Image (cartoon, rainbow, N blue to C red):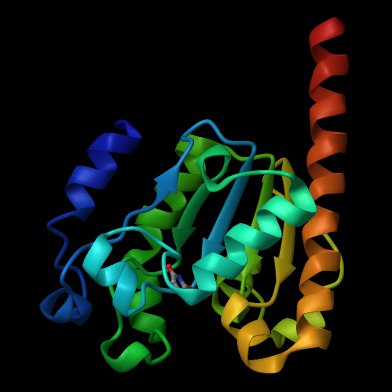
Length: 195
Ligand code: URA
């Protein structure tokens, strides 16, 4: 396995699926490559496609706010990526074959970063990583064992921007779940280190 930077370089010229033709930039991911917490969204939108960074539009502003208010963390302290690295035309949902084509990049990031907690945003990330078809409203509200750590599914911030107070309150509760999972993972590691 090469480095995360090598994987990013490889992705920057990717033509595995048809989304390559319409993109401005491949949005690989940003943040701390040694982060304990990794966030996984759906796909870049208009702003992300232009800037080459995930979650820089309105959804991103809400995400930054929730990270700060519920976890006391800034985006530089976590790693943020998406299931699909290129913008689907007109912001349509990513197709199953696009998710599959992009999957090696997602798996590569998970393998390099080895986050203790993965917080998925929206149904595509939760369904892809948990390999389940249930709607996000049924998947969220609990934690799942995930590759030696924990996965916490929550809504996509765009759903809170559309759906208002109830969705936002449930997202806040999920962010608190991620915080609790991070704290217990860190305590477990401390205990391991102390022997
Ligand atoms: N929505 C996403 O799922 N990802 C982004 O990067 C931006 C908006």
